[in-house]
Amino acid sequence: MNIIGRLTKDAEVRTTSQDKQVVNFSVATNESYKNKQGEYIEQTTYFDCSYWISTKVASLLTKGTLVELLGRISTRAWVGKDGEPKAGLNFHTSNIKLHGSSKNTNGQSSATTVSKDANLEEKEDDMPF
Image 1 (cartoon, rainbow, N blue to C red):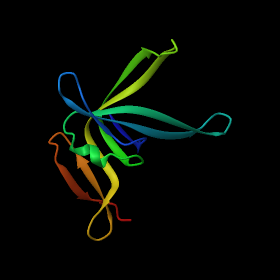
Image 2: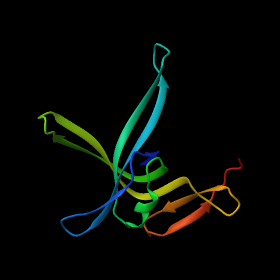
Image 3: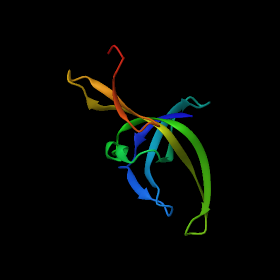
């Protein structure tokens, strides 16, 4: 599955009880549509994301950054402190592409991709505008 959205806060690196490190962050996606009454409705969906491959990416994942993620989605349910049932969406990402997060030498924006090999590679934006 592929999602595109903005980070809602800076990424955090956490260590599990098995001494594995994971990068956790949250992404908001927006969708708008016109309902039967002709009104435009904007819907925001929040995803709690995790990236297990490398913690190097954490410094690049800052609030407001536009990211494209490739991975799989899962759901989770729990009972809150108030006793009410809660649910959320988790996105386990294996590939992260940062859009417009850096500048190349010509002052044009470029994208940075982080994938399973954990290397950061810069790609020049192939859009003509």
